[in-house]
Image 1 (cartoon, rainbow, N blue to C red):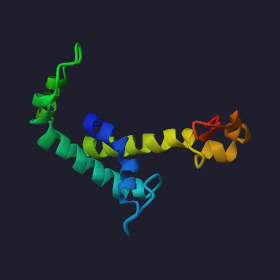
Image 2 (image 1 turned 90 degrees about the vertical axis):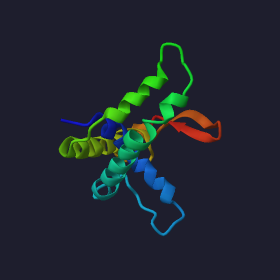
Image 3 (image 1 turned 135 degrees about the vertical axis):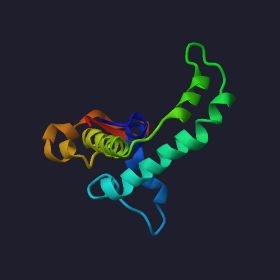
Image 4 (image 1 turned 45 degrees about the vertical axis):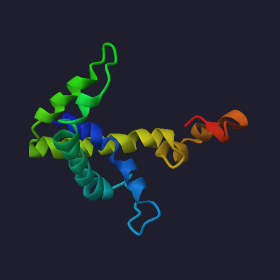
Length: 134
């Protein structure tokens, strides 16, 4: 049992901590225990705001997008949160973000422990950065 709304919002939660950069509340939300005490509560709050505050109002103001019926997003406002699935969805979403980051960032497990994973695939820099396997 996983709540889909909290799963999706939770997948963004570790990066929401970057909003605190430059403040005395700065933290690294890509590891334990921050996944539990930061990501889960933030996910539940943002998911609630999306479902209860934004979904009833915003979709009516969205344009038609061909086959993608953006106005039907108003259906999110009927979503009912159940405590356990919402918390599980929040944690699984945040954890999946961190797991995927471990493949795609220089601080990830693969880049630090698999020698060829950090090899450059483009000599020098391109578009202002080095391009590596990760």
